[in-house]
Length: 186
Image 1: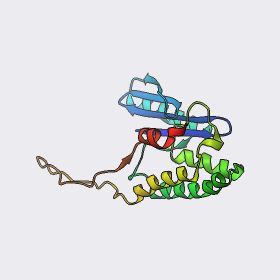
Image 2: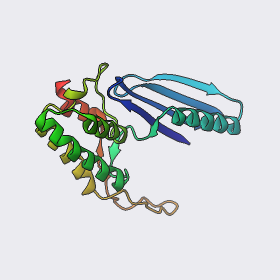
Image 3: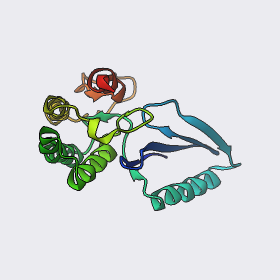
Image 4: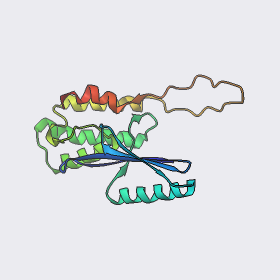
């Protein structure tokens, strides 16, 4: 049992994550700024049921504070709806960048986009510099569109003693790769 949550508010300079994983009687919690080294705490709770209970309580607390479920990496197993929504949000952001008009519509779309695609933006978010040019948005859309054309991973039944046939390879767009290539201007 595990979860990855993000909280984004570009105006308030907030771009953080919180994740938790239950393994046996342990609950491992990680948190920090997206793209930075996580702080880690391991709760040893005596049994699996207590670990799950603590997990559920902490998740409810974080969601109550505005955190939203997401993923640390964007891959082809991500919901097609999420990928398409991210592309729609970039289409909303695009004219604002072209016109250098960073009003409420832009901020709202940017915050929602960063919840779907957690992105390392540095320690100080400069919301009107997240996308410098329309070409930056086009590049991001190209990455997302490539996920829509990648087949989702297929479940493979394995008989005892037999290796699985070649399965479709899952295409993963790592945020670390995006960080090196796309976010080079930050």
